[in-house]
Image (cartoon, rainbow, N blue to C red; front, side, top):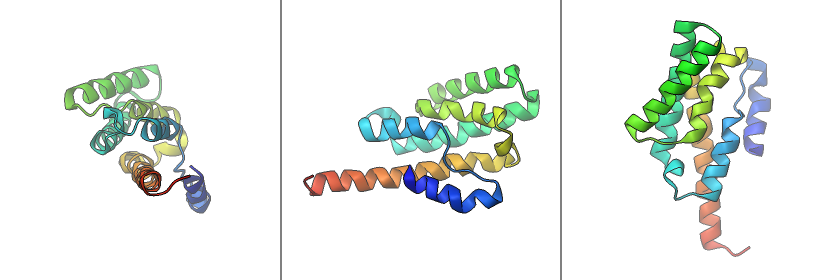
Length: 138
């Protein structure tokens, strides 16, 4: 998360932010239960990209408010069940988009940044930690 915060400092002048609340839950899943279905790379990427896109669609159709949040969350859960890409932290992305005006200017790019970009960084960190745990004693 410290690396992500350093990236936040670099991109702050552009009005962007990489560190978002769902990434705390992603870290918990990746580092405490790396073999669980929720920690699988496919599940992470598909869920983050599609759930974020569902938030963009819900805001465009229903506008800001409880209806958009409810529809986006229900659609996100239904998508994860239907696609088999179960990753609970991704369900927070649509609500974050609908309630966070600082992300709304990104529109469709919100599906890629911060969701997918953050997942790439966290997966790389997880692979590094796993490598170090297997090859070195601490």
